[in-house]
Image 1 (tube, rainbow, N blue to C red):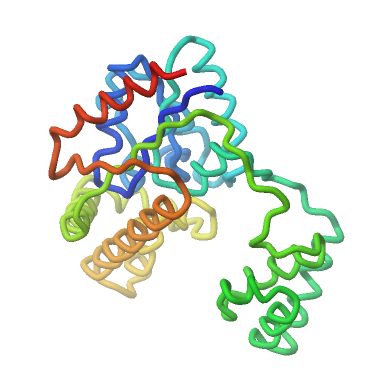
Image 2 (cartoon, helix red, strand yellow; image 1 turned 90 degrees about the vertical axis):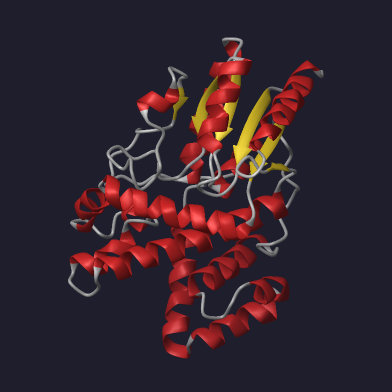
Length: 306
């Protein structure tokens, strides 16, 4: 199995800096595991690594899409796996860095993604959408509860999109969307390092980072997306929250506070995802920067193992 070093965690905890340090020390090359850093010109709002910060370490899956293009987890999975093969073949260490939990999980484990939708799939979805229109969300959820109680327990009746998806899966496969046919297997020999810090300090750092982004020109990036507010890139935190300001519905202060709030909430979701779904070893380099030695020693030991 190929060895893959993975660095995860919320924003503003030092993932970029650590990845550069480890890449220099262990002859690594870096693959971005971030769903927004793929977009060209969106540099400030995505906290994209700068050329200076890279210190000549090769980085991949950054600046590979225009902001009006879509990007999927299936595309990431395919491209990142190819990069792992290529990097390993040159005798270097692949280092995956990012905070998009679904991307990291789909890369490391054998999740089947990107199945093309058939006409039957679309007809099925339409059937349930029409049912919801006529009978309401509660009735739709009631159908799910009758067919798949496990899914109904986990999906709120207001989340019509997820309710319909769960009904589709049950009708197409005869199983719950929460009961995969087989447990996905691990495809690599990963070491997963998580960075975090005490919550109050984390939120303070996130707030400071947002203020810095505003000072660095975030409004210019967001204004370009405001022209095409329905594209995928425009849904990123730090961009869509500024749209009410551009429409004259909010002050810049209000919009900035909303970015901070949504960024803090996202950080909480990121941590929950990584804690519940992956075998992560956690470190706090914010309050204990000296523990980078522990990380380096752990990586060195892992690389020596078979």
